[in-house]
Amino acid sequence: MTKRKDEWIQTFRDAGNSIWIELSGTKKPYKNKASDLNKRIKDYRDIKIEQVKETAAKNYWENETLLNEVLLLTYASYVVMLEYRNRAWKYEYMSFARRIGELWEPFCKLLFDFPVKSLVLTNPPRFNDVQTKIKKSTVDYINGLDLDKEIKDELKRHYDIPWTMVDSGGIKLGLDLHFEQNGIHYNCDFKSGFSSNEKGNTNRLLLVASIYHSLGEIEKMILFVRQSEDKNNHYLQTLKNSPHWNVYCADDSYALMKEFTGFDLRKWLDDNVDWENDISHEFWLHLQKNDLLKYLTW
Image 1 (cartoon, one colour):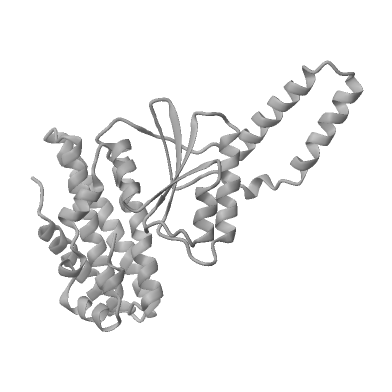
Image 2: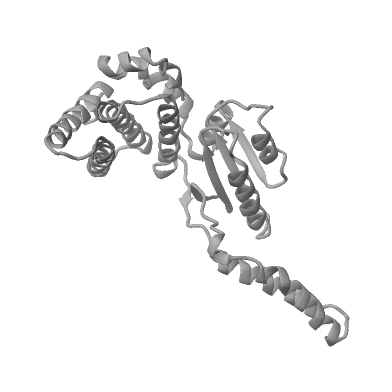
């Protein structure tokens, strides 16, 4: 049997209240209590997801039914997680805006964990393996040139110089999501938005994308951005104008997710997510008083 949204919210409030009563009796600092609340509600959510998966298998649910239930209970857990974190440690605008953004990525990834259309989640390659492949390809090319051995050796020596400057342990090719569909490897990153201090992250994304690009045409780079496109944001536009990244913002992100997974998350959000009416009145008053309700947008 599936549950309604209000039933899932009550389920998680019961769990949250039990955790809150237990933590209230301790002398832990408020930041530790907030961290414990988040972790334990997340652990409880993981248990519920496993139970739903078992029910789905026993009752031969369609993939869409399973995904809908997982989305509902995850959203309910977010509502309660935000409420009880605010009890332990009051939100201000920076922490609240950041938290709403942080929750978006794992929520979207549920579509790929429980897809309606066929796709396979994959692991990113290790940089050392990619490095070996690139170096071998180049050395093979040099060896095939109609040149004297001394010249070939000198070319290989010069080619080796930049590699000695690369800290292979510092280059991580893992992004937020990797999957394969119809023979194409998709390497995806999720961004809630781009702030004024994104230079380092932007440069890393450009570097990682260029490395994937060197692996061949079956590697595609996708950047999903929660917020609408900001043509004045230099870092977003840098990635969008690069030859390696395909950037999708706001509803364009949801449209592409639907193309990949077969599930319309934009419609699901419109039909099911109502932050202002789903959160507790106590929490709503805090957000309203501090002008934070405006951040409750996906």
